[in-house]
Length: 94
Image (tube, rainbow, N blue to C red; front, top):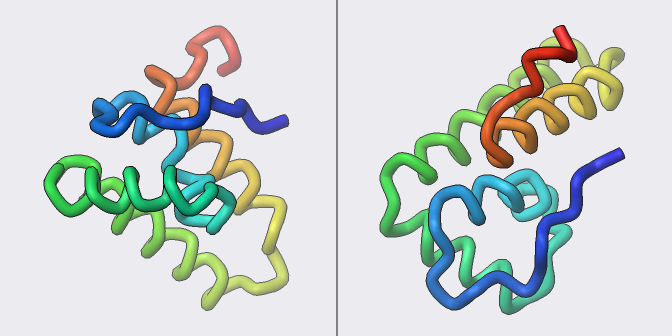
């Protein structure tokens, strides 16, 4: 089950708040206002912009190379990315 962050986002969210909704943003699941807030943050924050671009490239590569694997590995990757945005994966889950 995906963690649902507190929405709507503040007008100027921090990196942690953007990380918590990044996958939803990339999947086109946010409302128009939150989409605009995240897009503005990604334009000005190099770190978050790199993270968004990296996640997009990884998911695209998986889809191109192994379309038979979609969506299960993509769901796991999405969960991992959301954990990172929420402060990191749970070490006890390993």
